Length: 312
Image 1 (cartoon, helix red, strand yellow):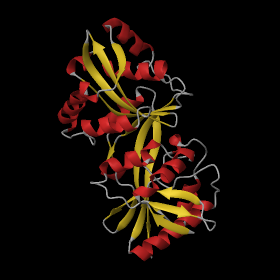
Image 2 (tube, helix red, strand yellow):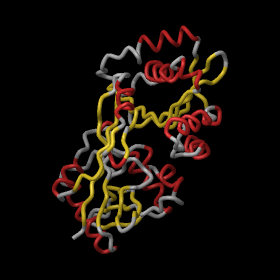
Image 3 (cartoon, rainbow, N blue to C red):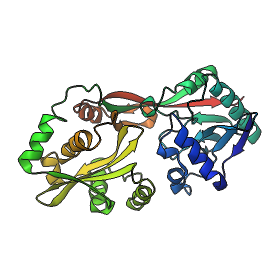
Image 4 (cartoon, rainbow, N blue to C red):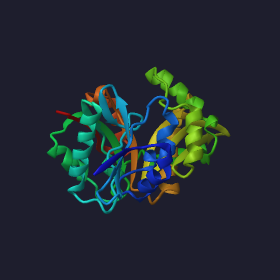
């Protein structure tokens, strides 16, 4: 097996395999990965079998003395296709760990794609992690609504619809994030004393690159925008990247109305609605209030894991 480090000349080939994969989302395409290359210098790998065929990709960066699944992404293990066999990741890990030794890395940090994003069954890498005595270092808890077998939730269903009708709230999709980004920024400042991971300009750039994958929605009350949401559409999963409301919007539960409209009126074919994780400190702290809030919508738990294999 041959390993080649990714270069910009490989972009078309890289994106082509992501398009054919059974577990990767558009977050693993180069236009998404490279928008913050200044903060996360790329060290992605391309693996070829003995016949010279490209069989997998590993989106990666360097973190200290470790080769890591891309530090700018929530997930990003080996990209697998329908041709991937259960034994293949065993050979891939062997090759990558040998590469780590040759390059002087102390180990490999690996973040598999959570199963809800898989197009087909794709836990092959999890078995290979076990075989390599990988240590579980991070376990974050995400809250996800199973839209095909939902837990009953009045907050997402009839109650949201009643509020929409009572207050005359309208929901629309927009292309300009600047219409509501200030609401997101202010909400993060007031509630968490933080700033969003992305800037408005970055999300505008990413929306332009992935117009069908990154979508912007606003709720209006009496003509004024009182809430906004950024939603990623990934392999049948609606991932809530950001959502917030003004004080007026909070009073009338405008974000609830956005969720209801998006799920029932715009993406009825979706499989899951992912509210994202509620953790800090590598999963060791769980914001129980945040989890309880998400579970009011019928969400239940899915894990986002990170593993480490030390190179001996």
